[in-house]
Each structure stands twice: as structure tokens, then as C-alpha cells.
Length: 289
Image 1 (cartoon, rainbow, N blue to C red):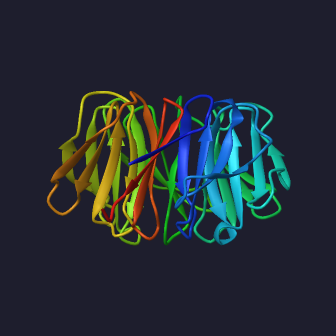
Image 2 (image 1 turned 90 degrees about the vertical axis):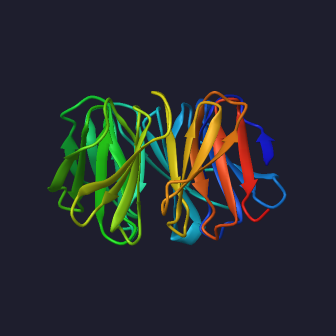
Image 3 (image 1 turned 120 degrees about the vertical axis):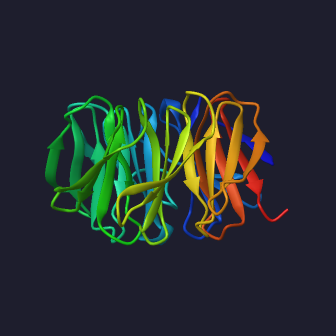
């Protein structure tokens, strides 16, 4: 494990580039950095945010990135430049979630007021809004193979929306308290979710039924990521990360020094795994060793 310490506060999001060569790290205080995965060197500082960066996504095969923050700004950066090339603004409240559709035609954001705001890409025109009917809910995931989105958060309900129509396709009861993370895999035929209740749920997305429920810990904050192979899921929690085999639910535990471990991601080539933590640190694991 390598530790990269350069943030001034919590690391809120981490995300590998499509070519697995670089890592985005987003944090409190509006910090958004780019790291070289091999050397661990910081190669870019992306400017423009003043508050916590809550969502990041690559577009155009890693040539550009989108980011959204608590200051209400939604920025587009070219990876080679620190200054944003485009800015959108949600004037009512800060942006809590950000996702992009698989065809990169639409950007979805969530705020306290709206669980879905749909924007056209690349121009950035707003095309639709769906008001929040519950507190602290938003877009947790978009499809890898189809244009649909998962909305969840506080409360038991998990809903799947068609995009761009924003019509509800179905809803299911998920976790006690809150759904902390949701990820599709297997060409959107299956998914996994983790809740504040410490339960991991494996979903059949064809029948919309829970296949397995597995307790991974006590109540608390959890992050989730699925390996590119679809054979493993990583769950981040206080002082540890658990890598769970989806074939037999066997678990490999790794202890971590940080109480808060907010975000995780696997490299698309499957060689590495990264975690963003509350102790200002990005932790990088080599899975081939």
C-alpha cells in the first residue's frame, strides 16, 4: 500500500482514469487533484471550486472531467489545464451528487431541492428536473450499458429511473436507515448496494429482487466499488476495507489508519485499487502483488 498525502482536509472522492494511468482525488475546501498512478506524483491541480467537491466523472475517454461541489458549481476541465473550460451553476443549493450517462449525452446532478437535474452534454442546457420528495436523496449510479439511473439515500426506498424521460421504472425496499452506495455490474444485469445498516445486498436487476444479504459491519458510513471483472466488491468503512468475493461471499480484510474512508475505485485494468480517506490521504493498493 502507498499513501499519498497532499490534501488539506478530507478526501471525498477518488476515481481512476479510463486508461488506469491517473487518479482524480476530490476533497473538502474545493480541492481537486490529478495523480500519476505509477509514481504517485501529483501532476495537476484543477481550480474553480470553493467548497467540498462531491462528484467527479471522466468524459471523452479521459480527455476531460466533470466535477460538482457544495458551492453549486459544475465545472468542466480539460485534463491538461488547471482552469475550467466550462461552468454551470445551480443557484439554489450545492450539488451533492453527479453522474454521466453511458453515452455521455447527459449529465445528472442532485441537490437538496431536486433529486434529478438533467443537463445535455456538451452544451450544458438543462432539459429536465425532478423535485426531491424525501430528504438527502440523489443519483447514486447510472447504467454501464443502458441509460437509467438509481436514486437513493436516506430511507429504505431505492428507485430506478429511465433517462432521459426521468420516468420511474420500479422501486424496491433496500436498507434500513439509508443506502450509502449502489453499483451496477454484469452489463447492468446485477448490482450491489451497501447501507448505513452495514448490510451488503446483491441484486438481480432483471427481476429486481435481492439475491443475497450479507452483514459487513455495524452502523456507519460506507463506500462501495466493484472490480472490473465483476467478481469482487470493496466496502470501505471505519478503519478498514473489506474485499468481498461475489461468488462465495468470502472476505479479505485490510486494516486502515483512518476512521473515515469515504470513496473507493478499482482501476479499469484491474491492477490497482484506491481509497480516499478522512485523514487527508489517498491510499493506493497494487492487486497483483
